[in-house]
Length: 147
Image 1 (tube, helix red, strand yellow):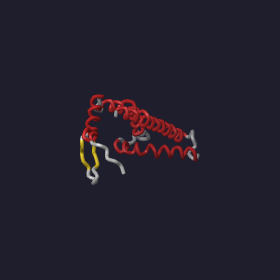
Image 2 (tube, one colour; image 1 turned 135 degrees about the vertical axis):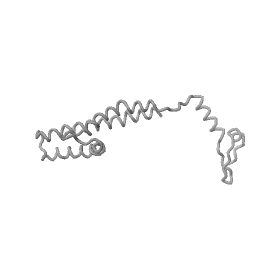
Image 3 (cartoon, rainbow, N blue to C red; image 1 turned 120 degrees about the horizontal axis):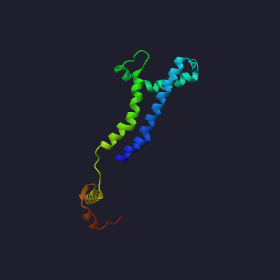
Image 4 (cartoon, rainbow, N blue to C red; image 1 turned 120 degrees about the vertical axis):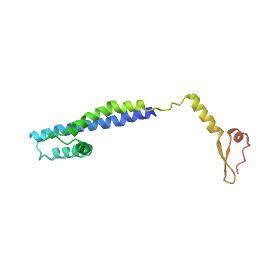
């Protein structure tokens, strides 16, 4: 189970958070360039990129803005998200995966589980009723001729 969680972290969560972080940086830099007049706001490509990034980042930033409002023109929610993403990706999620206690199965325990499941084989009667017979009883009965 721990290997599955590591795989989910390494191949899904970490890349998604990294892409989101890069998008956040592009959103901030593009916003500065638009305010500074370096990039033209009337350009359709610039507006489509900015609106796409805004639609991705705004649902994450809005709850943080309710708690911590912007200070003048400085939006602290973007800064908090920029600090939280590497913290989650690189420290918290890996520590949580390591801290979750999993019951490790030894070879002896797996062998015992297989033996118990074979001992309780479910057999179907001719009338459709199910009977629980032990594995030895089932093997000792002669095979019925198939018609």
